[in-house]
Image (cartoon, rainbow, N blue to C red; front, side, top):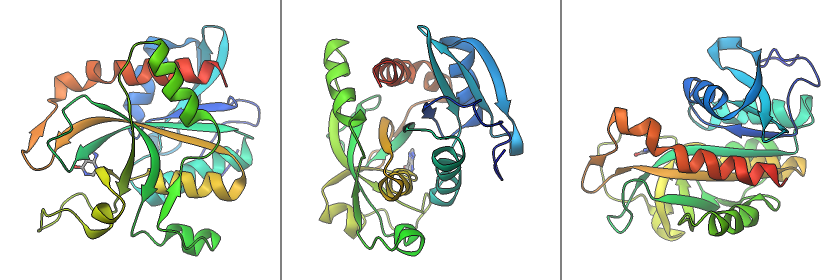
Length: 235
Ligand code: HPA
């Protein structure tokens, strides 16, 4: 048991898929895993452990934002001996060069967040994915004939803002899209010597205000889930 996850030691697999939303974790467990056990439901942040093609995988939510993923990923890495976390989430595109449903593999996350500085003394504003899962994801996508774009993204603390121009840090590092978690996940993994990747589906095009509708959302995430699971299978 850790502070925010109620699973016992040994009840979480070495590889964890981490969506933001607890109900998405449940959807993945119900539709993609066999012999599923619910191992934590503290704060309704569900964690499930089951088998994917015979390999033990866990899936559980990060919640939204840097503080939340900072807590869950740290506890997974340190209390449950998790080796790899693959975040699977959505993002808003800063450019209409990206299309709804595009799949992005995050190479680096740039952020104005002070999380890495005050948690780990890491003053970098750009933090890379950690370990081999990023490369494995690119290779696996190719094998599955899925198009995936390696890119830098902006991890922001802000969803709603008055000014819709592209934030300076995103321009500085060529970030094509924005989400709210990858930077903290990568910072934790880097400090702890663990592996972390982030796979994102474009759910919003910020300049045109296009959005994936609520009922498109579930099926739109299928390729991302399959790619993350097929990658996890090889870890
Ligand atoms: N901003 C931040 N995070 C997001 C967005 C967005 O527009 N869309 C999906 N996640």
